[in-house]
Length: 141
Image (cartoon, rainbow, N blue to C red; front, side):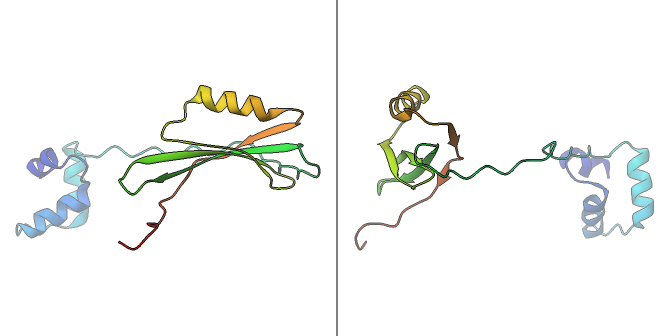
């Protein structure tokens, strides 16, 4: 049992029991658990995920143009496996596309420069997460 636990460090007593069973050593699960606990072979339990605290208020709808804009990245690849990204700035009220910047590498300074150049008089900005996708080839392959 210790040999298996030394090689397979993430295996718990149940999986070690299955490997022992394959080798012809049949053992009661309770006895297996007791022996593994006595030998100190327990695997550390993983911590749970952090949960958001508090209640989230729904975001108010934009009822006028230039009231709220959204920033989004769209990523894709060329036919030769070269990646590119598109920065899109959209007015949330009328869904007008205000800015599109496409390049293989868009730095944070470039995002900030484009964002501030187009910002003008607006009440709030909203940045969404990156949307990844892969387009289909343009022609027959």
